Length: 220
Image 1 (tube, rainbow, N blue to C red):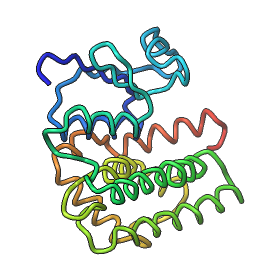
Image 2 (tube, rainbow, N blue to C red; image 1 turned 60 degrees about the horizontal axis):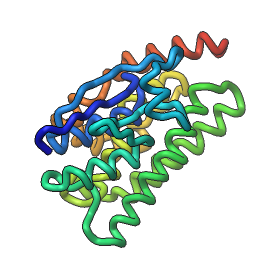
Image 3 (tube, rainbow, N blue to C red; image 1 turned 90 degrees about the vertical axis):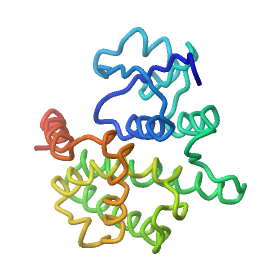
Image 4 (tube, one colour; image 1 turned 180 degrees about the vertical axis):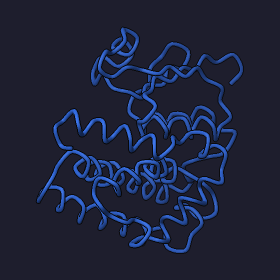
């Protein structure tokens, strides 16, 4: 909407921040990008998200919206004239929310466990992580995107993790392409969209960041 002031408080490597960046790009919304130091949180971040004190936060005309999936839904509702992300059918909307929630509850947490553990704990996380990817691949089936022919909400929720796959593979010694080729082909299709390719970070840069964090945790 003309005259809107939009600011995104974000950390470069956050897949949750990338979701919001993709959604804003899909809608053609211009915004100010505000990189946050998560080890030294800014007064603005603490003011805009006093409950969780986390990124991303979308500040729209001075009003903060927190939590990435809630932000993406908000963006879809406010800028509804272009590139709808959630389907209009109530059942399909519910299914989209289910799979986006699955990404958060399974993919994110299991991926994090791969990156922050060793030994048996890591092996168990790897097994569950691959299982979750296979479930997502099964849900995708032969569709172009999760919602069919149109890039949408589940795609926005999932695709940022693609630039973390290399880190999961490197640290966990796994090969996602070998076990989920259709899912990887889907990710590459998504990258053909400018809104995605310009919002995702370089996988090598993400992996280097992860290795540095593991060294700080004494895991390397």
